[in-house]
Structure formats: C-alpha cells, structure tokens
Length: 101
Ligand SMILES: [Zn+2]
Image (cartoon, rainbow, N blue to C red; front, side, top):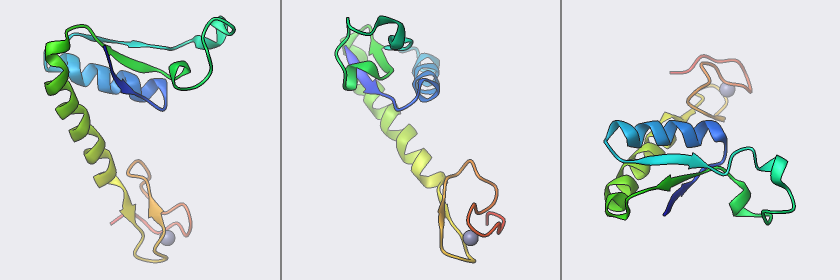
C-alpha cells in the first residue's frame, strides 16, 4: 500500500531509510516517471512515494512519518533580526544574513 507521498525523491529516500531502520519493509516508487510519460497520468501519482509491503506495518509507519514531519517543522527557525522564517537547513537568515539562534 502507498503510505507516504513525498515532495522530492530525496525526501522519499530519507523516509524510506527511516522506516527500514525500524524494520519496516518498504521501497521508494514513482521515481524517474518522466521516461514513462503517457503511461502514467499526471497528478499525485507522478510524485515519488513510499510503498509499504506489509499493511500490518501501516500504523507504525504512519507514526514514524508523523514524527519525521513534526521534526522537520521544528527545525524551522525565525530570525531575531528581521522576523523572517527560515528552514532548518539554513545556518543564516536568507533575508538579512543574521546567524541562526
Ligand atoms: Zn533575518
């Protein structure tokens, strides 16, 4: 079953590895769709997603994904200087160059 739809292939792989580390059997699907255009309809199905092999793992997998997503949100930070919101991966404010707290 499809358990998670990612925005980027990178995100899909991160989540997939995370699940595998918890002994959940899954794989990334929906990558490299561009070579198959015409066969696959546009929309959500053209995005990379995580395929779960065992439906019994779905509850645990959902928990891990939820945790992953809230962890990502937590990493966002607000600049003391100008109030701009920055993503966690940036060490300095993209707006004014102030360093992350
Ligand atoms: Zn700033």
